[in-house]
Amino acid sequence: MQENEVVTSIVIDAPPDRVWHVLTAFDQYGRWHPTLEIRRGEPVPGSPIQMRIAAGTAAERAAEGTVLEATANHVLSWEGGMPGLLYGHHRFELAEQDGRTHLTNRESFTGSMVAEVMAGGREVLLAEFDAANQALKAYAEA
Image (cartoon, rainbow, N blue to C red; front, side):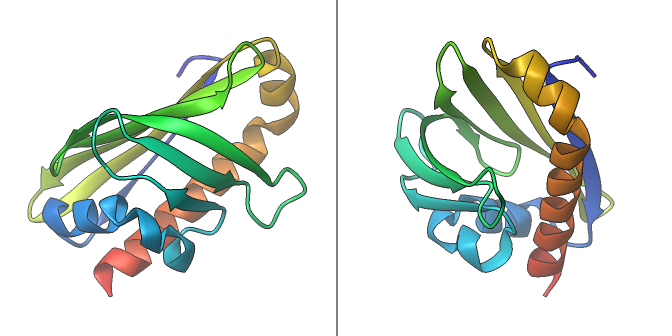
């Protein structure tokens, strides 16, 4: 793992197409994701998205981004933030594993604030990503 990257993973007892359906239902993130809402956008490359990130925390804020990749049942990614200050590239990677889904949830950051954010907040980000993974697992398995 790079110093500017957060990576977590989980195995979900559901096939990739089910997990993909949950990840691409942007209007439903508020129902399962503990800290992210996608308020506008479509899971289509080039689509602009509007998000509320770190929802429910002291760092809660609005952010805009763009969907970069949406390869059904394999990869969903977007980028967004404040260019030059703190810009993230978020990526969900799905792999079929004996009828289940191995999900990797990662984000890499660029900008002048990365070192400060990572020094003081890496553990918080890892905990948020793990919580999101567990919430996705519970929602996809239900």
